[in-house]
Length: 178
Ligand SMILES: [Zn+2]
Image 1 (cartoon, rainbow, N blue to C red):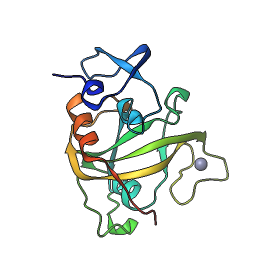
Image 2: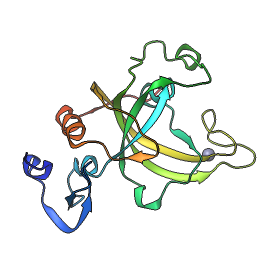
Image 3: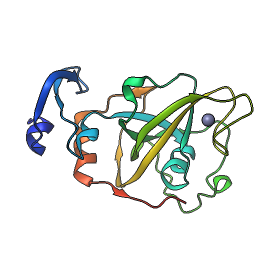
Image 4: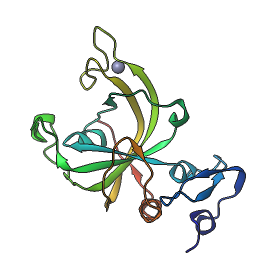
């Protein structure tokens, strides 16, 4: 199987960074290519309807119990909709997402990890930010035309190469933000 860098014609830069799901080294790629961020990407599993709220509803704050490593700032992350729905039983229509696809167990889009801060005592990042959490803020959110099936994991996880290939092949289109 050819490496992604060969298939997509990327140039190799200095140090090697683990990229592939099996832990093998993949070449670190210069960031001059638009698709480079997709080569470095991790995935983030989010339960529905909150995954759809990011892709279709303008949610740009992800509440997490841990701070985002500075290493990941500016990186593209795959937005993965968990198979299980959120325990709070918030519905898609509660969030104004009646027309959102509601895919589960799949990568549904991409976003760039923009910044991270601790929630302020007075509250911030309304209406999505919650007290007591770290707020990971997102930008450049895009939907995937065809969701890519994948099993979710905790934290920022490394997607299988096949998943990355599928995402790259779809050339995600920008979608308007409400
Ligand atoms: Zn905030």
